[in-house]
Amino acid sequence: MEQAPRQTDLDRLQAVTFWVQPGSPHSPLASASICLERLLAVFYQAFPEYNDTLAYVQSARWPHNIFLSVSDGCSGMLPGAARHLRYLLLEAFPKCQVQVYGKHWSPR
Image 1: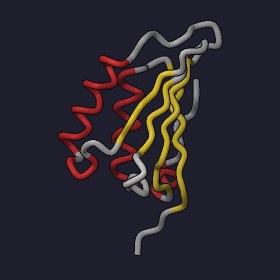
Image 2 (image 1 turned 60 degrees about the vertical axis):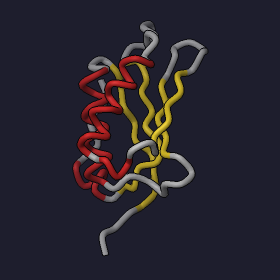
Image 3 (image 1 turned 90 degrees about the vertical axis):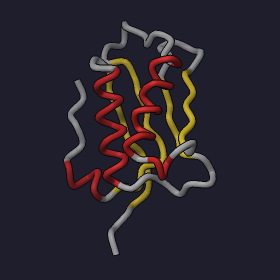
């Protein structure tokens, strides 16, 4: 199972993409659109400033990875929001790995 990024790593990242992949190479992800819609509704309640800025796609090819990305109008998610979304993804897909990609961020 993937080791969670260190707290300081996420504190320095302005998240742009979340990649959810199966924890086992032999277990593809099931269709997740309903789960992701619910997850995003919960996330938007906690962080309304990101409402409608996230889009997701689930790969049609095996193992059906999931990608969540911020829209072009958003330069990235601040660390607190990224940590919360990563937590929700790990709760929704407990046997999966969640990678977070983005750009360097530092508070002013």
